[in-house]
Amino acid sequence: MEMKPLTRVILGLVCLLVAIWLVAPTLVVVPMSFNGNKSLAFPPQGFSWQWYQNFVTNPEWSTSFLNSLKVASIVALLATVLGTLAAFGLDRMKARPASLLRMLMLTPMVVPGVVLAIGIYAVYLDAQLVGTLAGFVLAHTILALPFVLIAVSANLEVFDKRLETAAASVGAGALTTFRTVTLPLILPGILSGLLFAFATSFDEIIVSLFITNPYLRTLPVQIFSSITRDADPTVAAVGTILLCATTILIGGGMLLLGRERKGRL
Amino acid sequence: MNPRSDNRGAAIDLETVSKAYGAFKALDGVSLRIEPGEFMTLLGPSGSGKTTTLNVIAGFTDVTNGKLLVGGNSVVGVPAHKRNIGVVFQHYALFPHMTVGRNVAYPLTLRGFDQAKRKARVAEALDMVKMGDFAHRYPSELSGGQQQRVALARAIVFDPPLLLMDEPLGALDKKLREWLQLEIKRIHRELGTTFVYVTHDQEEALVLSDRIAVFNRGRIEQVGTGRQLYDEPATLFVGRFIGDSTVLRGEARHDGTSTALSIAGETVTAPRRIAGEANPVMLLRPEKLAICRPGSDAAGANRLSGTIAEAIYLGSGSKYDVKLADGSVAIVRSPLTGESFGLGEKVELCFDGTDAKLLADDSTADATLT
Image 1 (cartoon, rainbow over the protein chains, first blue to last red):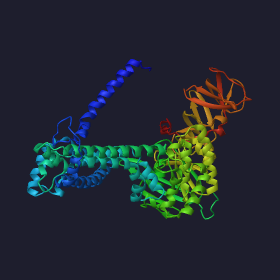
Image 2: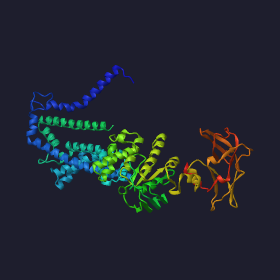
Image 3: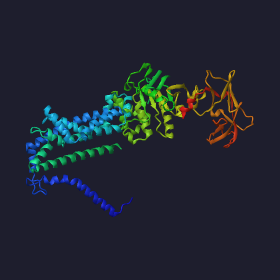
Image 4: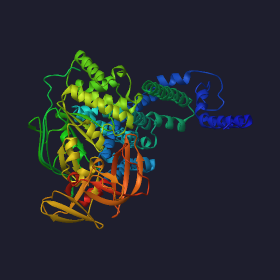
């Protein structure tokens, strides 16, 4: 269908507006991070790198960043392994119990974060897990598991199980079949699950606020307490760094996937 | 590929093999001996047990009862990946993340072949199926026929003494199917491997096989060459399933060694009788029947009056459907040199009693076929 020039222009403008509306709140952070004064006012005044410097040199910030990185990495690995195994188990189970179990495992996504946080906090007080690495990893893994489960299950759904029969017919045992046939074919699902799990843990705030203590703080907790205490533009600097990092990560991943697909077809 | 002299095919023995799913018997006491190097086709309608038999031999399905020997050794309980049997599936089942070359090399990698040997074997196998130029392509870049040839190469590359094929041409169009049938026949000849081939297409079975086992309802009805099954069907089901046929049913009367059927007031006789108490029917092949004008004194002692219901010109001859007085339809093939008849014409169906096969009636034979 041919579009009238005017229609085309209006459509373009509307799209642009929507795009700005979506991205603007994120982009506001970037100029703020170069603020010359210690203020979160917008538009910023002056220019300086000092907030970036503060992020790197101030142990409050750098330690919390490293803590988040550590927790998110362990959670990503743990949730991916557990979630993939769970997805496999559910995929090969009888339909009825499988769907019940699946719902159970997806509840952390549906239950309000605060409710979960209170529950976890209550248990952690007794178990003395508040402010510990193990405590963070456990809590975040509960939250990240559903994402892995969903991503891997979606991949398993389209995976042709008859390929496993074919592999067996030419002499591959169950483990070899998994390693050489099943795993490579569901790897996209596992990787996106891994990414989601990492992101879920890395920016988790609600549960983290409850189970944190002065000895172990993750980056979101640090940002939150910083911004409630004073107007420190370091928050904006951290935001900008994270924005760049995620853009590179996701963009790179998409580029890689695109190339792979092109090579195949 | 040079025929490897050491690679004689393996014999297969199924001894009263049964497979039950709950109350349903997928296989009900199947016994079959397949000779080394033989091309055996398992033929039957869907749900008749032919694919279950193949899966049992491949090791994808356990048997509930009975013995299964491959090359003289029992393989009951041996998992599929340890049986060293090649399998070709209807749905190709090529690994989509590997190139054609790696797909075919896969069985060799599992068996620890070094790279040089692997390369040579893969090239040999791909040449055999005429896919030598496609080693670097991915399966998604190939047509169905090409994918199936690659799947065949993957199944023979490790020199299995036995190759199983489960309706390998089922998803392909007619022309391609006919060409690949000849290719499969050639490969069987060159390899000397035992082939077990599952199909529901009786023409395909006739083209390919040394012998055919006809399956129905989890049992084997008859095993024999195509000619044996066509000329001497053991059961009504086999007679109906292989080739076109006309079945005459009527009130039976035994008269010494001959049988007479009375059909809507007319009587036909055949100089034989069947053993047992079952109701006899007569089965006639289209080329054994002739159409005569009423009152003419053409050959054939038996006559039945009917009407031409359909006349089809086939090029090499004509095919007629003749509706008989009792409502059943007879199929007649007549050479071009014969008389031709028009639709609705009153005619007589003539045949020699010795050409009629007398078989026990089996009402399930019709039900299973439709």
